[in-house]
Length: 190
Image (cartoon, rainbow, N blue to C red):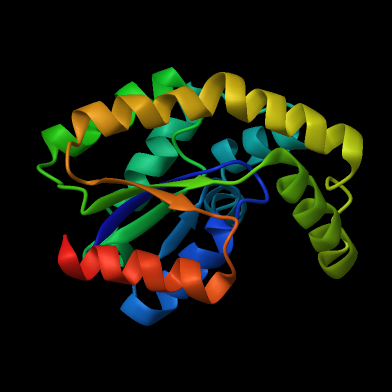
């Protein structure tokens, strides 16, 4: 099973990805987790990543794309994967589509999590209290959401067009169990 998840921070895609990954025994690949794993390799790239991230900058596509490629081609992903947080921009989207085509990898489903902004903001603030995440404050939330809607949300339309019949919008305002049911139902029925 190969899935790509779109949705703003706080839409619940990480929660659903974790549930799907556990149930289907496939890796949940969040960009942050992939980068944190890459830090442990203790080589020049790990050092460069550490410097970029500690300075508060985003990892450039020229570094991130090969890391994603390496992960997707690894034995961990031979039975499938769930991409969460990638692609985030048009360059990454083009790269991923080309990569999938060249490697004859077919996506099973692209899920676009839709929720209203007030709900998203409240979920992120609640998550901040539970997980003690310093990046979950109102100013950071506002910036992350603006960036998501300007750069990442338009990619969903590209994937909708490119992968006709495999694109699924989900009402992320529902409770976790209902969202999980809707996704599993869609996976069963194609």
